[in-house]
Image 1 (cartoon, rainbow, N blue to C red):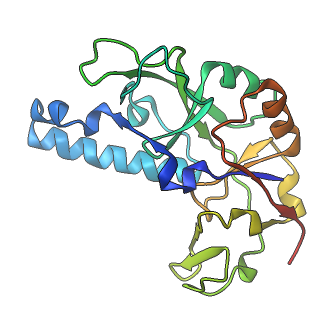
Image 2 (cartoon, one colour):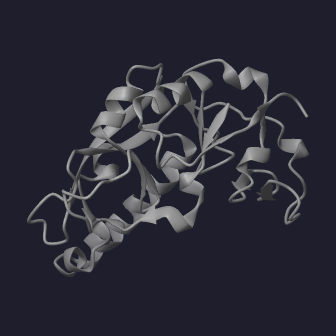
Length: 219
């Protein structure tokens, strides 16, 4: 079993900004419109972590990426806190059982919206397969620095500790189903099957995912 940890590590987040966050965009809108966009963007940020399939409006179309087309960009990037994959990576993923997964097309452009800033299209990876990681009771009490997760909200939600993801243990029952999934109680992680990771590596598109292996079993 594998975990994509990039979304859980703030140090690897790319300088990507959805246009609705941009000051120039907001200056041209009414206060009500700006407030509405803030709520919508916040809802979409929470939604993808829960494994919700977002609408086109929630995702948006134009995002600002301060790069140039001739630069190499990783197959998987943490774009402003969202999982983005290249077109070639999308094609590789589509060879596997993705279940309820949607690829939302994006335009990554410079902040003036005068030119694209990646050499190939990128997509918002919206995984809607929800399965339980299990083993929640063994993750340690809230604030215990020895546990791989912080347990907050009276057990309602677990926050993964960066660089401790490999200590998680996934129950065997979670292996049944599509090759990529999320656990809404453990946000900002993507769980991937051995089969899928082998395919990513064979195609040379495993860079950027922050892949770590974890055990399967019952604690």
